[in-house]
Image (tube, rainbow, N blue to C red; front, top):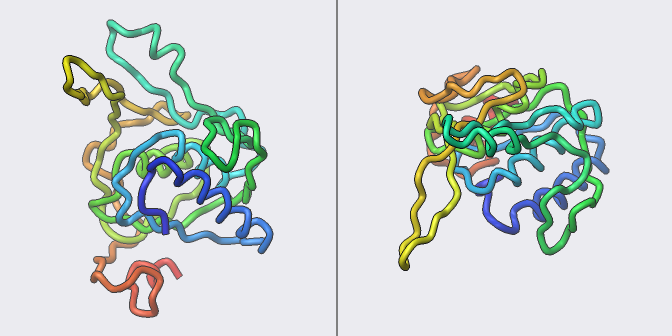
Length: 200
């Protein structure tokens, strides 16, 4: 269960994926149903750990700005990697990532699955990983921004669109589920969780 892309989440994910790697996991259910997004570098790390060394160096996401910012577009491509690229307190840059090398992943989604969470789905699909979506349609936000400060105010203008290795980023209507199942609010992972049961 992965609920947010906030600072510290990357360290927690790496620790969790190390456990999965040691256990020899062959199938993964990633619960993103309540994850509305956040820092893109955490999505990059999560996707890099789901896939394997064969994906290293391939495009995770290209950030496309408008025509007045072509230089930023040219230098704003995130690549899959087997190492931590953006440090958090526990795992510094360069730390090897536990990569599962999975050819497919099951992802639990709802309308609250948004932004960086959708980047995980889109980026994996872009390199040929089968992403089986269980739940309902995601929110549809292929756009992002960086905080701008001015005169004591913080502004969050939409600045770029993210596209995957195949150049796809037009999912403003969200990603449709492979298996359409409504969430009933029961505890995620419980025996009565309809999304997990659908994935299983």
